[in-house]
Length: 476
Ligand code: GDG
Image (cartoon, rainbow, N blue to C red; front, side, top):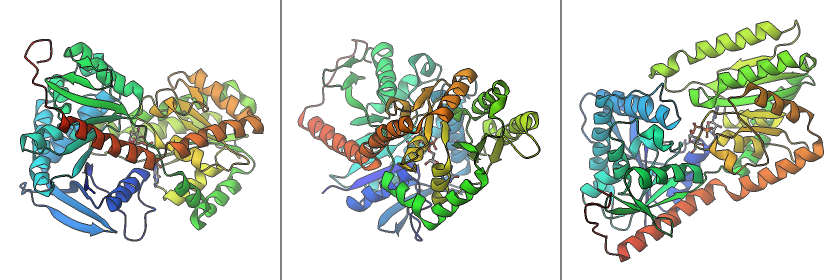
């Protein structure tokens, strides 16, 4: 059996004391690596005065982890710069926040080359390499340039933007060309995949084959949608664990008979937290009878504090929730509980379970796992209602949620009212349909489908002579 080598910006192996601090994605990757006896390679998170390319190998709970340090300048230009100040906002449709600095692009190329230099000696014939996310888009090109012939696949965890947006990126063509060195390109949804294909067909004159592959730049690649999932069984055991039960009981007690709305997000402008709060403000202003009968628990945790766009977000969020609380609160009731602390996964599962309505209203999101985790944590007999943005990748699968336009306060407010009034029978019916999807398209299905598609594509590619496509025909 061939080994699996997973490459991501950061690695997150299972903690020795157990897996509860690990997210679903990290757990799935760890499980795959144990199964295929592979290696997980990435940046250590540490800086070094000068780059040495030295690998540090460790075995953590059955998973081999290989990490390297980066220079300060690398971290600033590649990670804080190109990844989080350029690609992240651009791919989330925020060209107003996107910074187009040449030095960031150069740092990105340099670090991808460094990843390749350090990774190449680890790769053995027959290994398959699975690269994760927007930090490492050109990695396959760098590996191929160093003679790597193995199967290499890429999965993008964030949206692929519309063609008109990516044209604002200097050297967009080079970025896309580098993706043709993979065998498979994975996206969460057909929509993101189609946006990629649209660029290839209309900007570089590529063509789509009847089997779904696309051809351009004299190469062929298979773009395909692989919607990521969660481990639903793990969520059921998290919510019934001692800590999960304790947090559920605490929440139920503090609800004091009121209905609870819940938001759980990394504090990021793509998640639509301010817009959600404004919709809730509107709901309270238009429906004073709801006051004292409901409240919103908004949990927003810190992220990417090095990047300016994130620095004043807490202050802004606190000011907004303070204003809304000031406008509507009564002596014995506060409309918003605004919480910044991280919770353990067990606590989170108990909180999800206690929430009557989940508000998952990003302005743009690759998938959104919170939507799936909320569904998995519900009690079958009395499930809550999921209000879900049409701009989350999850909306393509979770059609039995109340689908909203997060840019419209009225639309979100109407959906909250509908959720609060929904009869038990309808809640159960919608939840069952949602849960069936969460169970079917789980994290293991995502992983196994990707690995199978990568093996298949590489086998087919190896059996076929690589086409030499003449210059012209718009493919250069
Ligand atoms: C990217 C894409 C895509 C949140 N607060 C706490 C906590 N969390 C966990 C949630 C969930 C995760 O963070 C967030 O996942 P999302 O999917 O919602 O969003 P991103 O972090 O932006 O992830 C996204 C994903 O990649 C996977 O492909 O779905 O679209 O943007 O798992 O539970 N976890 C703990 N305490 C908290 O307070 N323990």
